[in-house]
View 1 (cartoon, rainbow, N blue to C red):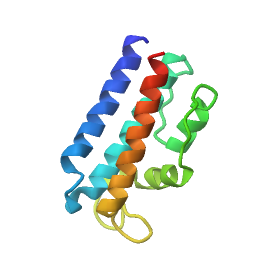
View 2: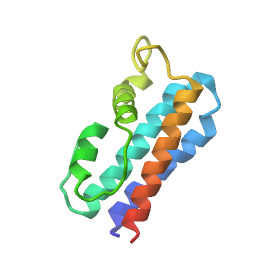
View 3: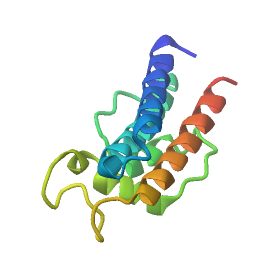
View 4: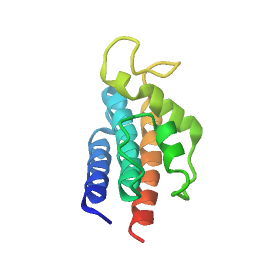
Length: 130
């Protein structure tokens, strides 16, 4: 595994660690969701780096999964991917931004996003370490 790939994975794990620190705080569920999205994005960019797919300057998880689909054997939950994509940047801003159709992510939503991110990052890390 090349050094930049390792760095992408390290930063993905930093996002997972951040989620651990804030996951139980109902005031920070949007931030936990943002870090779940970021962890997945960075792990997918590790795949892109490792297989020299190219420099991809996008943040959309659905598109990143599509770009890496030929390399990965990871089952994804497309519904969660779409929710995380919808929450991505907007989750850091006030008002109606960063909310699901029913409002701000709940602690349960944040936990589901976190568990999904852990599975994706772990799956990609294991795949790349072969």
